[in-house]
Image 1 (cartoon, rainbow, N blue to C red):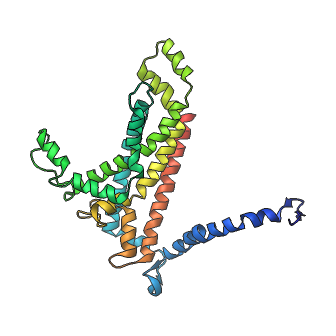
Image 2: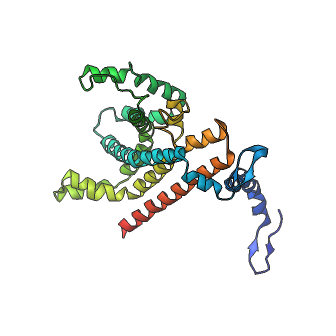
Image 3: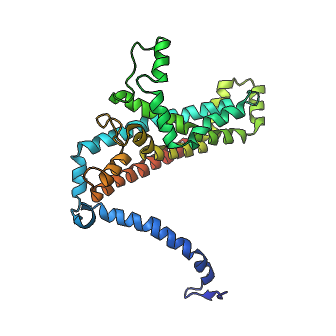
Length: 299
């Protein structure tokens, strides 16, 4: 062991501690700090490989005049505005139902709802393509019960393709949020509900005035992680549209656009890095607003 030494300002430092964390700090620097710094530098350039050239803020100007980027940004924000509230509310409802100890088979239901989170992306995409095909089970069922008279073009119509992506994300990730709510509900002191019940507080009032306030930290956490996941949406769109973001870029997201700019069409690493920092700014801004709104409500 190397003995501790006294610093110039009277503080003690332990060389052994720095030697212990040095490998971890090295890995963080190599795989996190370096890519961040390098991608930031790349965002001021255009092209790829040896063809990179410095363009300053030219990529930002290009963003503002790029209709495909505007479309991808609009789609991503649409998913955020529509998808996150649905996923949060549905997860809370499911957790409240499964928190009932008298529910028969709640362990089976809990597993079934959470199972899509750990399912294979390939199997998941094949399943959804088959279910929502023109002659798939979803259209057949809707026609059989008289809801629609003709098959819905889930994979070929811009509006319905976007709806399909929202359904796919909901099916896959609602169970993930539900587990957090379920754990939080099971940790609430049951005596609080008993006192409220004795005082004649109805069930809905108990839920809105007791359950919801006690779940605020979990609601904030799930909202933030759902926001981050939605703004980085890639897998579902890539698998359902075979990497095209179609039809007519109706489902294209910022992450898929970055992938296309990097590995498909005419690769431009610098421009792709600039688009990636749009996601960084959006995540930081929306997370800050959510934390700020939560703190204001607590005052």
